[in-house]
Length: 74
Image 1 (cartoon, rainbow, N blue to C red):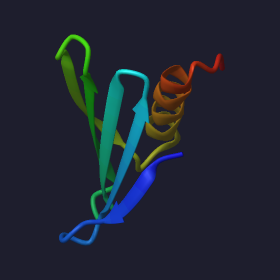
Image 2 (cartoon, one colour; image 1 turned 120 degrees about the vertical axis):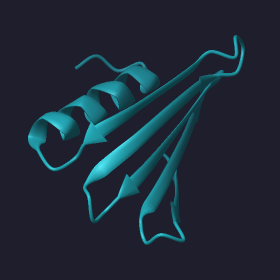
Image 3 (cartoon, helix red, strand yellow; image 1 turned 30 degrees about the vertical axis):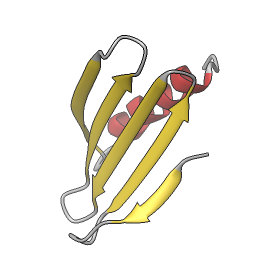
Image 4 (tube, rainbow, N blue to C red; image 1 turned 90 degrees about the horizontal axis):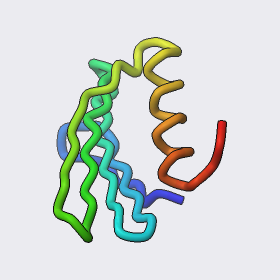
């Protein structure tokens, strides 16, 4: 389960931790954009990407990434 916080800009921030991985998703509700940031704590590798949450493809991609984080096959 993520930790969920309101942002000062009126959006929502979600945070997950699974093993050595930390994920942050900042959602801009007005623009329907999710700013994804991943960090592997064991290697220091980072990833960043924007997800278009105005369509089903963006939500599907978010679901895929979260399943991967949780070790769930889709």
